[in-house]
Length: 276
Image 1 (spheres, helix red, strand yellow):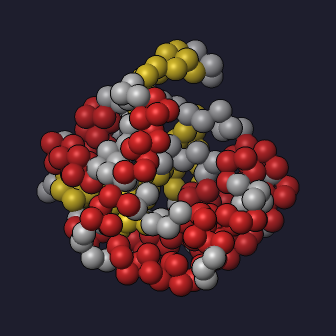
Image 2 (cartoon, rainbow, N blue to C red):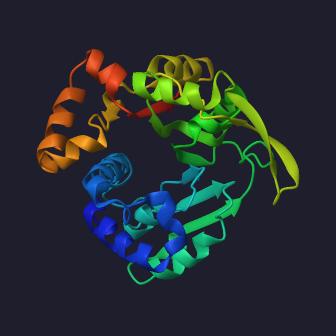
Image 3 (cartoon, rainbow, N blue to C red):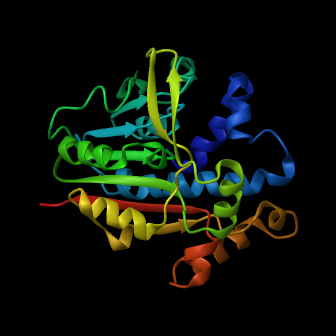
C-alpha cells in the first residue's frame, strides 16, 4: 500500500474516529490541507524508503516504534506486510484498538501490537530489534543519554534508529518554543495510568549537530545519506502556489547544504546505526 493510498483511507477513517481529528487536522481548515498532506506523505515516504522498499522480500525484520502514539506508522507498515511492536504513554492509547478494527479490512493488523509502558521501566531484552522508530518522540525522552543507551542495548548488531523530528535549528520554531516554555526544557508529569511521576523533555528539540553528538556518545554513528529535511514552506504559501511545485522546490532546497536547509526547514529525519 502506497503512502497516498494509506492517506486516502485514513481520511475516511477520520470521519469515523472523530476524536483523532484535533490531532491530525486534515478535516479542519481547507486552506492548510495541502500543507498538512505534503508533510504527512513526506514522512511516510521516508519510512517506506528505509523499512519497506529496502526489504522487498518482507524478511522478518524486528521493529520497535517507541512512542507510537495513535499507531499510524505501525499500521502503515502492517498494511505493507511489516511486523511492528509499539509502545506509548499517550492518553489516547485506548483509541488504537478501534483503529485496528478499521484497518483490518485493508490488511493484516495482527502484525501490529502495542503496549502502554514507560521506556525506563520496561527495558527490552538486549539484541531484540533490527530497527527502532522514534517519530515526534526523541525530544521527549529524558534522561536522553540513558534512553539512547537503552536503544543501543536493544538493537542487534548494526541495528538502526530511524528518527523523525523537529529541526532544532529552525529559527521560527526556536522563537515559538522559547515563548511557550522558556528554558524549561525538562519537566515531570504525573501519569494516571502508571500512577507515577515521569520525567519528560518539554518540546526539547535539538539541532542535527546536537543529535549527532548525543548518538555518538552513546555508541552510534549517523548515516549521512539518510539525513533529510522536510517542510520548508509556511502554510500561507499553499494558498497561492501549486502544492506539487512547492514540494518539488522544497526537495531541491533540502538536497543542498546551506543556511536555508539548516535554519528554515521545520522537519528533520535521520538514521543512526549502532557501532559494530
